[in-house]
Structure formats: structure tokens, C-alpha cells
Amino acid sequence: MEKTIPVQKNDYIDVIFEDLTHDGAGVAKVEGYPLFVPMGLPGEKAKVKVIKVNKSYGVGKLIELYEKSPYRIDINSSDLHKYGGCQLEHISYEGQLKYKENQVRQVLSRIGKLEDVKVHPILGMEHPWHYRNKAQVPVGEKDGKLVAGFFKPRSHEIVNTDESLIQIPEVNHAIQTVKEICSELGFQAYNEEKHKGLLRHIMARYGKQTGELMIVLITRTSDIPQKDKLIEKVVSILPQVKSIVLNINSKRTNVILGDKTTVLWGNEVIYDYIGNVKFAISARSFYQVNPGQTKVLYDKALEYANLSGEETVIDAYCGIGTISLFLAQKAKKVFGVEIVPEAIEDARKNAELNHITNAEFAVGGAEVVIPKWYKEGNVADVLVVDPPRKGCDEALLQTILEMRPKKVVYVSCNPATLARDLRILEDGGYETIEVQPVDMFPQTTHVECISQLILKKGN
Figure 1 (tube, rainbow, N blue to C red):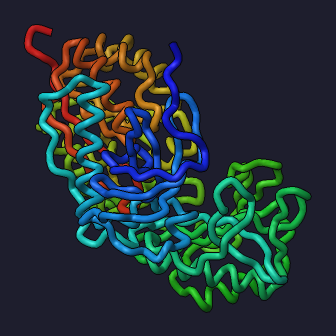
Figure 2: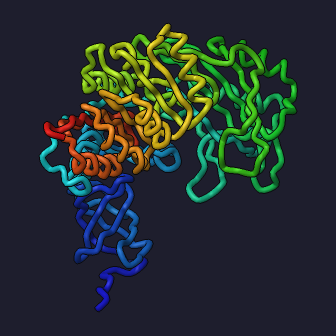
Figure 3: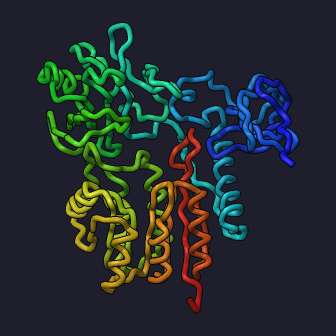
């Protein structure tokens, strides 16, 4: 017999929030039926309006708070919260860290059945604002002027935003300056519906340790009005700029970057450091957006790898070689693999830049290249994985279980797929020793984790 849903759309009901969802909404239960309400916090009593109902859950809107959480802070309903992805901005930083650490513990227990694994207190930031070293913002027009900011949810309307509180101030300033210069020079914003106009996005990248700025204009065509004047104005107002790049994206697509990139002025790359490792960053490079916390994460990876200088290390999903080059300082040999050819080119250049000769990189899927290396006799003592949100490919996990490296260091940006993969590795003969959550993205629901696994004796 089908269970009756206890609420209907447009009902007003009183609830007590018990938990938070993975995207930061409050969870209330009405006769066991879950209701997800943005901005609700555990322990709060509130009046909500039911705005959506389906068989397994409903969605509500917060109308009135009767009792507030001690972790709630006033944010004056900022644009950044509504449009910019800062889902936890209304929670004190202490509360955010507690929520994220709790999320990791719950997921490891529920999905991975890893109730006894040691989960360390989360490593947060001393100053959890203005940490992002990269911004890429869509451009539109309003009242004859360019606007740049965020898309309103479920729409193509751009909300003009002068400052993002999670971007480094130099990045905010660069975006606004370039927007105003382009507006003065008569740039037309790209119109998605008509597939006309020129300027689609403005990107700024910043080297936190070097102070170098890169400006990237993403346009529909290569016809740049008053190009020389544009360069002159940008360089005179923003003396930190070392590179101005044009990326052409002529397709009808939501993908930001196009295939063709040319340097309008200056260098092809800017530089930054994580610890004492120097990185060249191009317009298309993947580079962690929070370099301070990246150092915290990579130091922990080195600690968990516990290298003596005699080990062979394989770094799956190596990107531009960030973790690989950290490990190469302590390992005998590091092999990195990444499916994106441009990233591997960057990894090789970064190895050369740092005079690191014991790191070797290959293009391809980790699940294809690592089994090939294994058959050729390249067996890892330590294997490091840092996969995308979907977690490790099944074929890679099976190769790890066949190769049986003594240690696995698993860096994850998704606790749910981490828990799933740890369960597979545990069932195959590994033991998860410890898990360290790291807050790479304050004010958002994202949490990074790093786990240390060792091969059990007799396996």
C-alpha cells in the first residue's frame, strides 16, 4: 500500500531542522517524510512553506525562525549567497567546519561502513574569506553598459557583482577594471540567444606568492576593437598584469573556454609557488584555487606517503604535476598520469622549471596507463590518487588491488565517492588508517579529504 505524503504544496507548517543535506539545505522530517529547506540549520524551529512535493521528499521555503542556531550569522541575503555558490555563508565558520567534519564522518559510516576509522578534526583557514586566486565571470549588457557577475539560478540573466568575498581582492579588482575598460572601448557582450556579440567571459588568474596577474578575454570572434588601446589601459591601471590572453569560443555552448588561445600581450604563463615548488600557470591550466590550503593538503599527502627516498610512486590523475612534484622531492621515482594532454605538457614544463629529473609523465586514462605500467614491471610502492568527483574508475581500483602497493594515499573532493572506493579497497586487503578533512572552499559545502591506507599483513 502506497504511503500517504503528509504535506501538500503551499502548506505552511512548523518544523524542527535535524540535519543538513550535502548542498547545505536544512532537513526537517514530517511524519518521517523529509523536507529540504535552504537556509535552515540543525536545531532551529521554524515556519516553512512547502513549495515542491514528490514521492520521496519535499522542498520548502523558510518563512519565519522561532528559535535560531547558535551558529547562524546575519548575511543580509547577499548576491553571493543567492547566485555565487556560497551555500554556507549564513553559518559561522566554526559551524561550517563542524558541519563538514560531521558530513565526512556520516558518509564514511553510512556508505563505506567505516565506523572505526580515525577521522581527524578538519583543518580550516585562519581567514576564511578572499582565498580564490581565479575568477571567470559571464558578461552581459544593461542600459548600454557591460555587466559581469553571476547567472541567476535557472535563468540566463546576469547579476552584476562588484565584489566576491571569496575572491582574492586583486582578482576582484582586475575583473571590474577590465569590464570597465571593455565597456569604454565599445565591446559588445555576447548574446546567447542570438549567438551574436563579442565578449562572453572575463577571467583573471593571480599568483598569490608572486603577485602576477593574467587576464583572459573569452570572445566569440578574434575581432578585438581598439586592441592596442585595450592593452595600454589594462597594463597602465593593473601593473601586476604579466599576461593578456585571448580565448576564442565560437560555439553555441555553455562551456566557457574555446579551443583557440592566443597571447595578446606579455607572457603565455604566470608563476606561483606552493611551498618551494614553482608552477607555470597558463590560461587553461588546472591549478588549485586556494593555494594556502593546497599547501596544507600536500604536506599531509607527503606525511601519509612517508617516503624514505627509495620508493617508486605513481600519481594517478596528476593534472599539471602539483602533487607529483611535491612527492618527487622525497621519492626515488614518480610516475604521473593524466588524461588531458595540455596538463601533461604543463607537468613536464613544471618539472623542468624546478630541475626535477625523477618525475615522468604520461597522457591517458589512469585506468588504462597504470595497468600497462604494471604489466611492464613499473610497480608502485606508494600510489596516490586524486580523482574527479565521480571517484576512481573501477578498472583503476582493480589494478590497485592487483598491484598491491604498500600504501595508498587517496585525495578526494567528494566524501561519498571516497567512502565507496575505500570500502572496495578495504574489501580487497587494505586498511584505512586515518582520514584528514581539509577545508579548501570556505563558505561552500565542498570539503576535501586525504586518506592513508596500508596493505594488511598477509595480503
